[in-house]
Length: 436
Image (cartoon, rainbow, N blue to C red; front, side):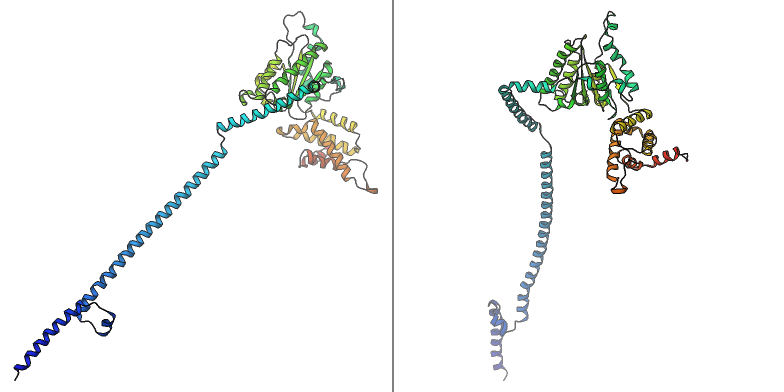
């Protein structure tokens, strides 16, 4: 009874075994995935590829992150390098702009020479077309002054020590017979006057010309430093040539060079062949030239506020080196009295006493580096400022003042000498019998 039933069952099993194989080979479609659930074996085979896909993006992500990091680092390094390079290029460019190469200097000198040549050619053409004007210009540049209009020694206030120093110079000029028949005697070459500004060096030089009664060539030294190359040394030659001709007719001549430090500059501070160096050397030559007549000599008087800047070889060519100092207390008093009288300003008696006894005394307490404030020029400026203060503050109508008072002087002192007036109060109190 059970035998017929087993055979069909075995066939069914075989059929069932074949079916899974066909199912595995068949691609999974949305329809089959949605309609039939896969068997466990099918799920295992399907899930294995899915696990491999998940591992691959992780590795890729790590690789991308590493690459991106390297790119960032590389980019930063490149940007940093470029920034440094640009800074170095700009620095080099600025240095190149600030530094003038020898070639550029040569080019600038060439252009400058061309302009100078062109200017000189134009000047020569003008001179050829009007030669009379050239002669007039040269003659007007170096013309002696009549010394009669200058102050004589007896009219000078101060200069006591300075006048003693020039006695030898004057004696040679006034008593030439005493220097004859005693062998070789060289005339003095000149005087170098130095000292702080405003001490009266020019006044003293003019007084010397007055005493000697010699033609006086008064020349501003900066004149020789304002010309084109080659012209300044020629101007020195022209000056001495004119002076020699005048000296022959007048038994001598004086050349006065004010601010002479500009043309007697120390050669060690100059470039060889520079225009100022050429001028210095030309003066050296002219001062000791054989053409100079010792019987009718040319005397050089130089005045400077900066004696330390003058070339030592030039200093040695001056027979006398004289420091012109500010006046003493008594000399300042004489000068102030003379100026008040000459200017005719209306000082009250109180103001005069304050000026001569208090302000004048205060100048004795000035430090060494302010000695120039004792000079005559400073005293003149003090008087000018006082009058201006008086005119501005004298008032109007019935209250209008007619005399300069001590407050006008005190304000002028603040403007010209010092803002600190405590020393004035102490001196005034002391003069009245108070404590020092």
